[in-house]
Image (cartoon, rainbow, N blue to C red):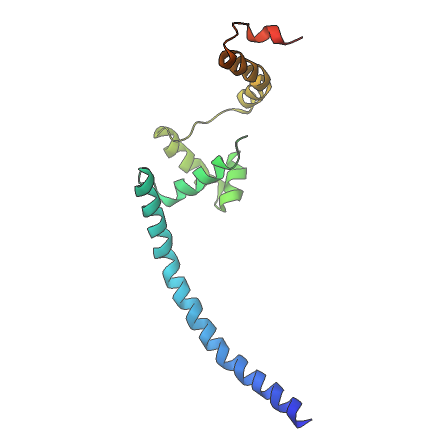
Length: 138
């Protein structure tokens, strides 16, 4: 029974010494995350010749690019975990810089309905067969 008690005591002691070590590691990691994130952004921008955008705009662009169907301001705010008013301000600034374009729900629906016809147009132009795109439809 003593071996069990010693093992339990040893585990308790190890847990007590691991807690301060974990806190030191967490503090060190926390201190490096910001500089690491900024260094990665700088390297990516430099490698690809991208403009120097604020991080909030980059996050919103990532969210928008991962949703080809588009996002409402509320959905974008949820995705990037900011207030809807922040997204509205970002979109306003990004629209002025021509980084994004606002599209109304009616326009989006019309574009969605036009996709099959546009696909047929691309096929007709690529094949160069001279047929009219609408001649392929029944």
